[in-house]
Image 1 (tube, helix red, strand yellow):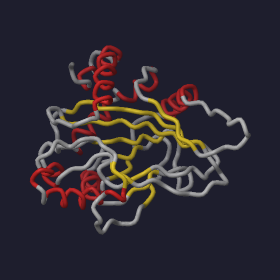
Image 2 (tube, rainbow, N blue to C red):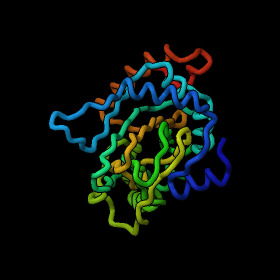
Image 3 (spheres, one colour):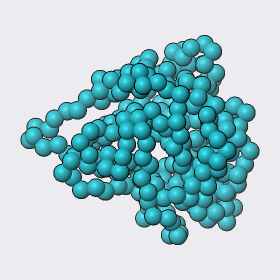
Image 4 (cartoon, rainbow, N blue to C red):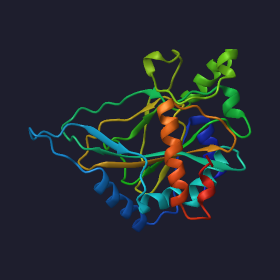
Length: 262
């Protein structure tokens, strides 16, 4: 599960990497499914540029078994201080290697909160899982993040009544457009295959270049407390509703409750 000290790290730093109960066979099956869904396409000129490929709205059983695994629901309830949570969104990503490339990384937030959102019971926020289907080291496109940056941004937003009372909404904002605050230096999230980083994309973070020799595979799964409103761009909101209707029918009956009705 997740310990109290790990929950505290999630709260204060914005990310913590923990073990999961997934077996090696489960992780291997998911990895094979990634290869089928996100194949490497060689460029015509023979070069191998850095690129990420991803997709959501999948129904492959190996992936659905991860989404509906009770572990992720249970951990989300603990970190969000919620009696019940709902599945929110998911995507799978493979980042292919460019061994001769230059290491660099993006920096942005996907969503922003006020301090009162972060400290509410339940929290008015998204719990994001980066499930590592391959091991990720400092060269293999680690997620780079600035610890506690979500707290700095939240404190700044808390000062503004309009922002403090706004519905948290998914909207990418680059570092240059964020408040100029005393952010910590970016650090990599490294992990073994089968581990998961529990984090908030309200902190400054970003994808990095894979300068290793093996692909980096990650499965992103998000949950929100039942009854907490999170805004989405119109196209994403429509897509989510359509996917959820089908997803609810595909999950095991005893697990379908994680998908909201409607």
